[in-house]
Every structure is written in C-alpha cells, then in structure tokens.
Image (tube, one colour):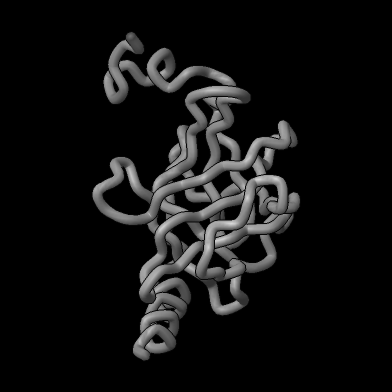
Length: 151
C-alpha cells in the first residue's frame, strides 16, 4: 500500500542527493559510467516459478509469494544463454534485493557474480547491465579475501 510513497521518496533522494548505487572497481557508480543500453525494460511479477526454457532474453521475472519477492530469474546478459536464478528471501545467503524504478525497470543489490559457467560479474541498475573488470574470473581467485579457497 505504501510502495508508491517509498518509490517517490527514493526518486526524490536521487534528484536531491544524486544517484546512488554500487561502486565499481573504478570507484564510480554506474550512472557515472557511460550509460549502458536498457536490457531489462520491466520487472515481470509472477506467482509461480516458470520453467527455465520459457525465460526469454531480456525478460526479468520476480516470483512473489504472499506479497514477498522470493526469486528473480533472467537470462545471463553475457549471451551464454544460461538462466540466472537469484534467491531473495531468508534463509538463503547470499540473497538479493530488488528495487523497481518508476518506469518499472529492475535494480539488484548486490552485484551478480556467477561462480560457474561464464563467470560473469555485473551490476544491474535501472534495467542496465554494468560489467565489472573481474568478469570471467572465479570469485575465489579474484577476491580470496571475501570468498576464500574453493575446495
């Protein structure tokens, strides 16, 4: 019921305080980088998790159960074709948080770093993908301080 007010407050914060968001390795927010094309134009909300083979490129899906986001699904933006499925609810750790812009475009927190397959590492902000410099490197090799050694 109050979601529209929360969206309005966040929109006003961005206008007054400037854009906020994840810092990249170059210590810039995505909005300070060259603006990327919009890959995910809207957040599609569903009540039941769809089969992976029905998720289309450019489609961003949030599964909501009892009013709470449970999963987000989308095809990896690198083009490998794999479906990325992110938990958004306890007890999963890590879990992601989604914000939806007034235009309906998704923003995810924290970044997405695939630990198998293509090893893509990116931020999703306002439907745009911002690539991290360490994409293509295993998380435990690029950031042993955070991830430790893989066994």
